[in-house]
Length: 308
Image (cartoon, rainbow, N blue to C red; front, side, top):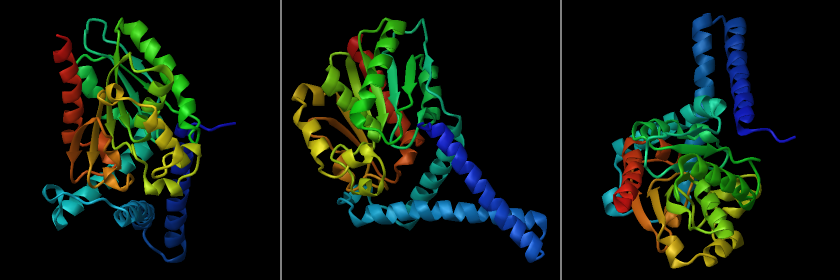
């Protein structure tokens, strides 16, 4: 039996809660600490572990980092803001959004906007898009999301779910083409789907922090999909060799020079695609940062101007 990401994150939350309670109980029972102080210490201990994991990702990514252009280099204050935003985004995503996240489709019947398919990244689910979905709804853009499961499955195997949802979204809206917005591994899923089913039904593929050339940190991740995302791996090379200039021209790669998961960071540069670079934004925060979300909405708005 394969557990969903939603269930896995709920179990991890229970483990963290148990750890916090155990620390609080020990402090209150053995050291005579006031209950409220013990409870705060338990929660703080768990948060410090989570912060250490975040810091470790930044350290590992820095070991293999690509050159940061001068205009994107950060001072101490900028680095602290980067860490704070990424930490908060990670906590919010894994502890609140993902445990509640479910694949959904929302149709705006009166809208003629290009509908959007949302594809999340590795080890995540549709809850990741909680900040983008209200913007799509406010713009009257019909959209659907998919939970890519099993969590450690092959990227190629996710293509069937993408195909079903693309057809369902087209049938529900009457649209000839859809746009795809994908975070991290989701961008590779979209490209694998296009390799299998063609790109005629794609108006635009907007990727956020997708390791188009792989990431060194994938060597530390479990699952077939992590192996496929290894830097300059055979799967990525075969995917790239299957694509022509017309397909690449459909892609907008939005990425950050301070990505703490995709390293080297210029692995998000896909030859033949359009690129929008940011600085001072972490990997998870790409789906939460207002500047990045504005860029995504701008790419979607451009589609409507082109078809007008």
